[in-house]
Image (cartoon, rainbow, N blue to C red; front, top):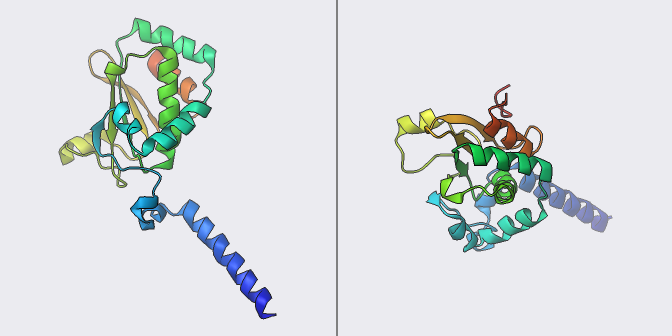
Length: 189
């Protein structure tokens, strides 16, 4: 009987640990940093910097598995040819949503031929605090969830933004944004 109770308690403990790992945002902060599957990058950085760290593992895994719809990426490419657009991505290398969406977003940009000289990538901390800007600038920028992908027109005015996860697919949401069609990210409803 004692063995059965021990096994049940052990199974319950394992289940609770697994559940806590998937529901607690602080779960990773309790893990020895040598076991983390990411390197925290704060501030502006390049794709090359991201790929030269342990972050390469999650980036490439998602990049290689994401398969954007060719007809949609073709439409986006057409818009990019006709409009002067720049994009800034605010993301957390620690964030599962960023680890899922950011590599897929880069794949979409690659499929559209987007000029990456017009792409800025900024790493934020777990509080979504954008480094190296004033508190007033942070409030105006309004980064509340990551990834946040902001698309700017030729005048540097924000056209719209993608926040955390798509309404339809990443490429369909991006097409609406760059085309100037009606689009609301998931937190605007």
